[in-house]
Image (cartoon, rainbow, N blue to C red; front, side, top):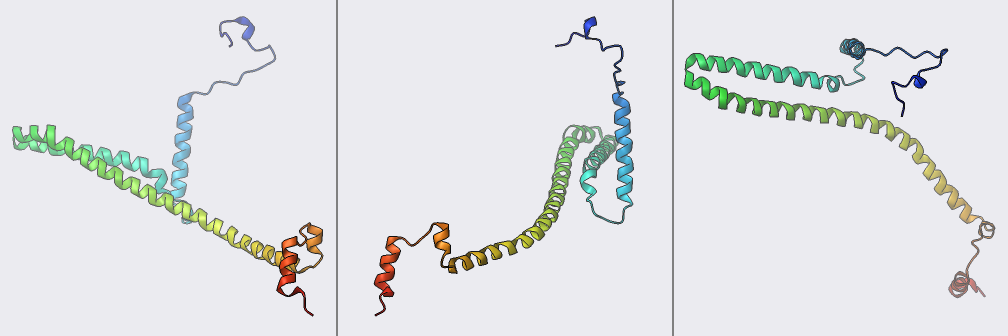
Length: 179
């Protein structure tokens, strides 16, 4: 372990240390990069990537804010109508409404996310299918080669799989003796 207060742990005179990057600047740089990429994908006419997967967290945040502001507005409206109605909406109606709408929104966005993930995986499987189709011809070729090598008389001797005693006996009993 290096002691930061120990003078022996300082770098040598010729060595330079890289400047420490400000975490705020790094976050700002990443945020700007993300925004540029977002706008590039938004105006792209290729449709080769699903952009919705990247935007779902932002959509969720904006929708939750809209739900909360809408329920706040309805609570103020309820207080303008009557105090009891406002209190009911503030303590029972708005929290239950927020819980229900936020849960439904979350389920809907997760469903969309799953659909897009399935679509991405299907796209990958289509690419694998092409590879499998190209390789399937190799299996047929190997089977043909095995069939050809079985017909070569000396192949059994070379491969060390000569006829066993049982094969010779069955061949002799089944018609190997053709007098």
